[in-house]
Image 1 (cartoon, one colour):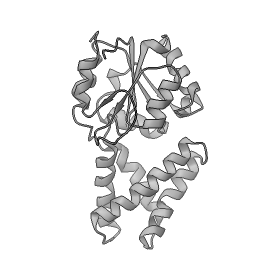
Image 2 (image 1 turned 90 degrees about the vertical axis):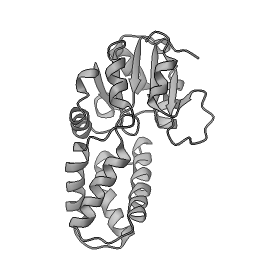
Image 3 (image 1 turned 180 degrees about the vertical axis):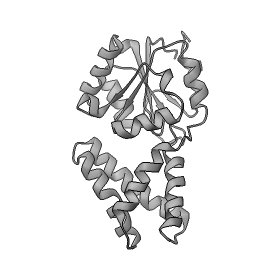
Image 4 (image 1 turned 30 degrees about the vertical axis):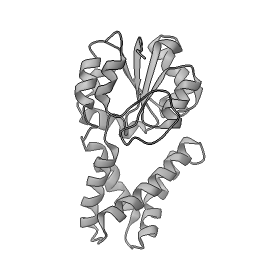
Length: 227
């Protein structure tokens, strides 16, 4: 299958920006500062479980941005059974993590290349105050026509309204866009339900029933007929 899009829509976290590596680095630094003593993998898995659960609730509209931020590290401390200021820990995490610049393999080179051939857009459920810091820090802001956030739109992926807003900003029809993202529901099924062709970025080769997948970002080049 070769796609012939007029514009490309990219998710940011876990698709271009290596969220897990960046988060792990910050969490390990904070563990040292707060005198935590845990097996690094157990420590990370605890955070990952809590964080993913809260983000799923946020995407489903069950909790607010404030609730996500206020409860994430309180639950983290409770799960680990440690004392101290979860609020201070969370503030330091939010200050440092967005300034990390690890990207998914091949992301910078791919986006730099594609920006010469297509208008590129970021479509993200991430928060405005965080996402702009991440994108600027990665040196990729100039490659994108626009950064479209859930705060800007007033709704989140996978809502069709989110994708319709992105299409209106790009000035194209659904069939003329192509969405690339790692999240099965928010990125891929959401786009498909809005009539937008979509490719699942699946570096861990998780089994799905989605029609189009890539395991490495470099594979995208071979799927774009008009690149």
